[in-house]
Amino acid sequence: MSTATNIKRQYTLTSGTSKFGYSEKGKVAHFTKGDLLYIFLTEDGITSSSPPFELEALLAEICSIEEPHKRGLLRTILGEASLSSIQQTYYEEGLLKREDLLDEGAPQRIYLVSKLVFGLKR
Image (cartoon, rainbow, N blue to C red; front, top):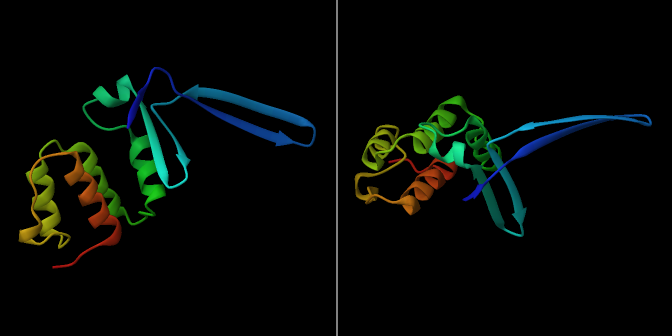
């Protein structure tokens, strides 16, 4: 993830020979290059007390997370500061075994997203 000073979303509607469009401020942008996903957040999006909804929607779309229950678990990963609290929720939901519990850190959050996407029942 990287920081962007400004993100704009642009919308264009073409009807026959006419083109209509507008842009608005956004907090999240992304692009892919090969198998790599690049995500950019504005400083406001990074420092916010909760992650931007755009980020949750983007990750849910990329990871094909459609079920509301799993979207809630994704929101937990993105918004909860305590890894142990997230792991406890995952354990209670059957997505983690006791021996899968990890130390704090960003790679562990990525691991938890993969558990959410691919699932692993006790």
